[in-house]
Image (cartoon, rainbow, N blue to C red; front, side, top):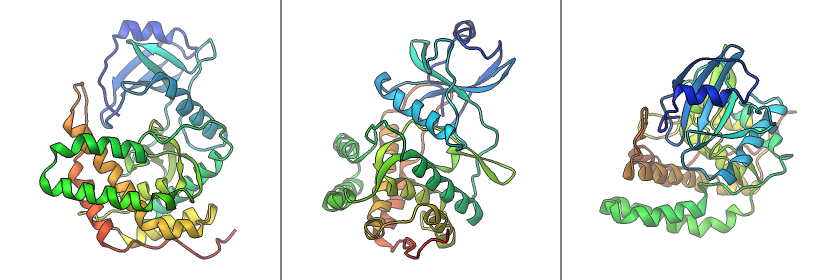
Length: 321
């Protein structure tokens, strides 16, 4: 989360008058993340998070907001969008689409252990299962087509070695694209990094930032979290953490044979997606009050390692129910 647009306090106070959440007491920008402007809001009746959407098309936003509401209704620790007095989730503040959601307690865990990974695997499986009954569909905004378009724009700016690596990986991903279509699909989070999960008293208390969610292969979500949650310094995988995460996920939503076959390629696809998004953010930095630009080289190195090294296999035993 970041701050690119800072609303005036007077304008924010007027905007909050459309809600039944009391009077504004305090608001502060949230540092971290790369896409939208985010603020902690405290009122006389509670604590909330305000998001101003900087680049996402307004027509795409109902998908994310109703997905969050759907998952919250299913008991998952997801921020619930707050409706205004007209019953609408989405408003306009500082000329930007804006939404208010419940603020969840807890803090992120920068150094997860095997127990953290097991819990996040179980939670992700629950999210995927609950998402089966979500009726809306919207493609993954950072899926394969986005990767191809972004790569074409970035390639002339890259070093020779990085350009060669990117070209080779794009050709590899194109060669396995047909296999991806045979995987189970559904609503995915798409960006479930450690800083998008909150913990309290040793348990997951919040899953936040759904604004890269979409309809895609469920296994992509699993690959994203393994690449982040189970990574050692330098990018190699911690087998113990990865096995704990995968076993916990499998116990709720068993992996299919097609997923086991494509698993190493999906780890590479997830690494490619975040290498490209970080390259794009670095190539076109945005001005703001609190802005985080993440190092693209981290995911270039992860991509190289996933291409060279065998991945921990997905579980193939029947889960214990």
